[in-house]
Image 1 (cartoon, rainbow, N blue to C red):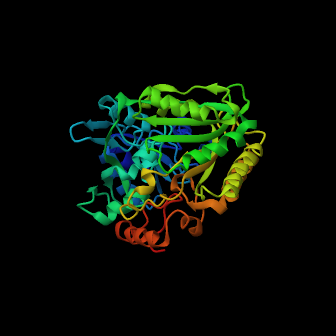
Image 2: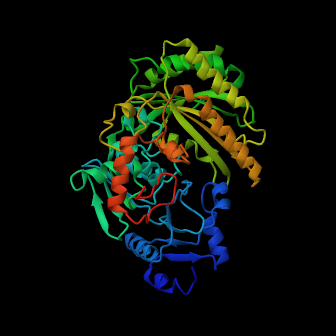
Image 3: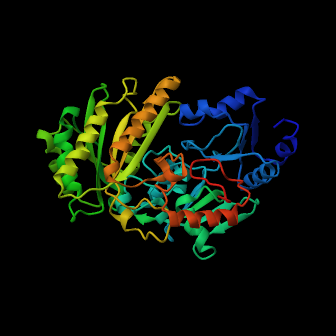
Length: 472
């Protein structure tokens, strides 16, 4: 792709076109992404910084006509498929507007916005939707793969709240997709939304946030040597059938600010009185002979959403992988096996792992997420009690550390395979058709392939692990 060949495109754009010829601007755009490991490995042809929907249409038409691969990213730039070698990135970083209709309880989100942009606007009206777990994550990346967040036990997946999309098709047409206009494409978009076009706006229904957005949260911590004594009663508690879906208790292995390995439970309690929420936290804090640090307090939900931001800084190397698991709560052998696996694997993390950004996270994913109508969306990750993920970060660009990091994450998922029930697309990292079938059941894949053949028969949108060619 030469500058001469791009002259017509550049003149047609209101936004910016950046090519390899402008080395300084190109590197600034390339390394803007969150994951330095990806930024180092992916060398795109260039970037179209779209000013709006028209620029997206112009770029799609141009690159389709020139048979040039396309990737898409937004302000968050978290997605591992936002850049690719010798592809052009359509960058939506300037398309971040969020508009709330409080009377209809709807939010209109441009596809470049991150979760923090959405939370900031919806909180004004004490309304809420799932936006992920780190506020600088791009909202579109979360939503297009289904979307899970801190309060999915209460609110379900992001796709459960989506009522419409604006998108640019492979032919450059701007369309609105909803249940009335095209129910089959709407079904496919809600779980595999990156395969059929470029979404430029999401429309979501909102829920009322009680207590003026105040929840009880923040970590309750123990030394890592207490992990088995804490994790075992925690697993018993989260299996109680009478629990409210507004109570979520996450478990994590992490490091203290001093670098010491610790474990913790992070409560997320919505809609209770301060006294009632504290009683729950008091009970949890008594595990393992008593917590050494209690940070749980009353705080705005938006503060919780931003609490992890500093633990996942930009321009750092990351790898992660996870799986959904379940077990019989009466099976003590199964519980002990899961606990021992998590404790052992945390102790086997590589020595070079960043103490700031390396975790094993166990997030509750039952409740409303599991009750969602499986026929209403292509999103299939609705089974299981826990989403267990290994996340590792490292400081330099040593490729051997990437290989070791991947091995550590893959091994965690493999060790939990006896309890594996499904996989969440956004951190499954599928590398084959068989791994894709661990994300989407075979019948779902057949419907998705039929939609692909109808809406993108020439495979304009084919870059990324959740994509597949129309003729396959």
